[in-house]
Amino acid sequence: MSKCPDCGTENAEHNEFCTHCGASLSGPHLYSHTHASTSSPGSGSTIAAGGNKQSVELLQRELRDFRRHLLAHTSGLAGALSAILPGLGQIYAGSPGSGIPIMLAWVIGLLVYATWCIRTLTQPRFSWEPSPTLTVGHVLVGLMIVVLWVFNILHAISVSETLQGGK
Image 1: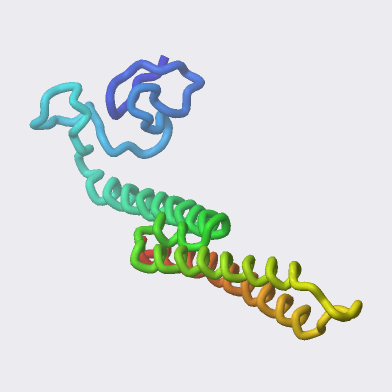
Image 2: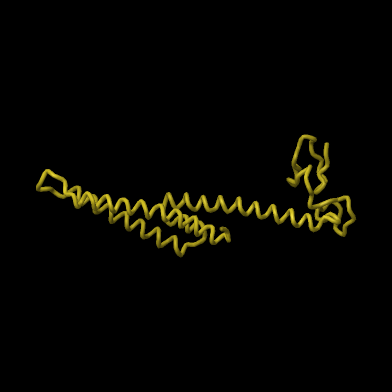
């Protein structure tokens, strides 16, 4: 059995981390019970003597890594949500002021486009040949929708990174 240097919990020899507090059993430790302290014994709130600067630097490094990791997931989720419904990623990222108008514009735009497509399909034609202006118009509007959809995903990621203080 090995004893956790941070909280004092007994752990199995093969454990790399404490089962109680999650501290590493083999690396540098922020807390220590081996040094004199002013806190109550067993509270786990004493900083090791002489290790203050190293402990703070280690903690800052860990927090930076965690923030980068969290930001990557937050930005990715914002992009994924905007891929599902444009504007939803901006709302998730914390910018409802830009997300709600994007969402409303997208829904209204798709309804107008769908109505246009349905009306052109149901109109009787006097000729057997398709009208090239309608075909080109539908393709151009469809391409514009795809471009705006991709731009919206990138915008959601950018908003998320900006609001989180990232890149």
